[in-house]
Image 1 (cartoon, rainbow, N blue to C red):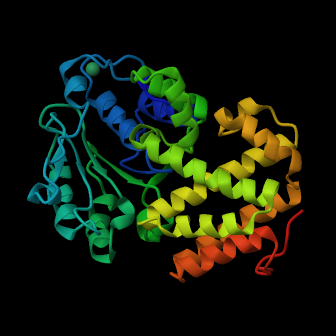
Image 2: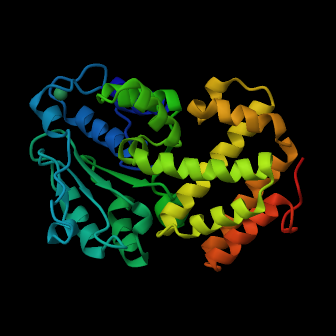
Length: 354
Ligand SMILES: [Zn+2]
């Protein structure tokens, strides 16, 4: 029942048509950001294929096959050997492999090849998901190619990735690609409310999640709120008080972010604040901004913000992100970012947009 899944109506339409026409490709590639439901959609297809009482090509959701394909039995310990095996659902024909560490291994692809060649034990089709398909290396990709070339009629493979550009062309050319879109804040919010999160918290989380239900559910709201408070200070110092000392203090705090991930989260937050103030300055309604609950503070900033500078700031933050990829000194670049934003230093890397 695709209507139980959140968002991606276009993808639902495509998949449903394939199921109704009995034209599901043997190999598919699901792409799109983390946490937007790619695996849930894949499991839903496995249910539709194996459901005992399907309706219009879709799974009933209540028969014993549907119930058993609901979840994957992930190993409970991080270091368990089972991570290198196929992780099965409660149904003997539906399983998944995931990279135990940094790469998907050749043995895992061989297991899939072997299993894909068996006829279904119980249902009508076997389904194997390859999660984090971007973690295939040359050897495991080649091992997978064998089964991708000629998947047995009763077996289906779905590769899942947020980074399709990392896959070898030989793999890409053998899979039908299905692109998933980020979810809208409203879609995420209604999903959270369905999962017993109160409306106010759901709204805040939905807006902090940047299109990902996964992030909305797992995100730490306390951290988010404090990151946002710190980044609002930066914007205040840039627009309202022109306070260099505050900017340098903020740069220092930003550098205290222990992990690269957390550092990038803070940049994300700063970007959303800048965009919001920018949008408000252009007369956009507060219901369309990310940080709607801060609309009073942001409106004050919006009155003084120079829209063309706001555009430059976003580019400057993006430049910093690029520099971080090549591992330049984070502290030096962050200090200079805020000074560039304040207009003290000229970056001169990119032409300014107006
Ligand atoms: Zn069913």
